[in-house]
Amino acid sequence: MLRLAIQKSGRLSEDSLNLIRECGISFLSASYKLKTEATNFPLEILYLRDDDIPGYVQDGVADLGIVGQNVLVEAGFPALEVEGLGFSKCRLSLAVPRAASYDSVQDLQGVNIATSYPQILGAYLTERGVKANLHTISGSVEIAPSIGLAEAICDIVSSGSTLLGNGLREVETVFRSEAVLIANQNLSAEKKELLEQLQFRMQAVRRARRNKYIILNAPVAALDAVKQLLPGIKSPTITPLAEEGWVSVQSVVNEDDFWHITSQLKAVGAEGILVLPIEKMIS
Image 1 (cartoon, rainbow, N blue to C red):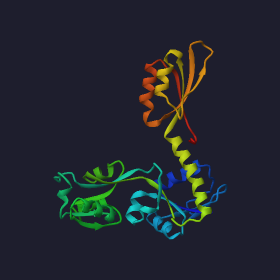
Image 2 (cartoon, one colour):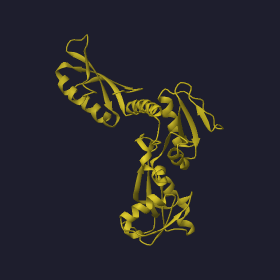
Image 3 (cartoon, rainbow, N blue to C red):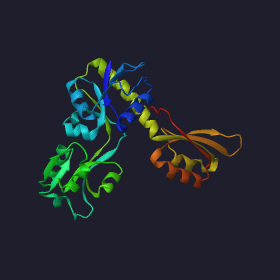
Image 4 (cartoon, helix red, strand yellow):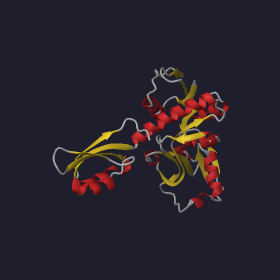
């Protein structure tokens, strides 16, 4: 049985559990439980503090983990990363008071900076030849400038609203992060096989999230133009309609390209365009 460690609460926990469920893995979840077992896949889920997950996986207490890449790198275990999962994206950024002057990272020379990520920030500053005084604090980093603890901060940013609410402005992106799947490097052959099965399911779910299934009607005269816009996985599926001179075209479109391609399809004569979600997508 694989032991998978995830954050016990918060957005990352919710996103991780949703991914596992979308992989067709069933389990009971309750807020008071610190672990649960899947009913249809050899998987046990451990609910832990996110900062503890890399260490548990490194030591073999857990076989796998889902954790923010920022937490993994700060803990000093980047080699555990198996693959990015595409959710819980954020950035680690430097911020200064709105009224402070700032031209470049060189302005931070000798400055006091409050952060919960001294390892990542220290490496970033060292690469740029900046020597600053780092004050490590575990939470409420944004308050540091207003109470005189530091002249700048380095913290996780999603929308930036927390910075604005505390009179700060973002000036540098230090590190970009997302949720990653990590694994102990000494898994048995049996557990490696289970990990491959789990990855196969996760990749099918993530591929489906990134794509849409599209069905449309097009005049035969416009078919070459439509096919150029809709290559599909190999090529689009084309079926003649009862009305002569028209065909039905079915294909897959990447979410990022969808609106641009749809407007081009309409321009070449496509009609009755239907867009459907994909539950799983196996390449």
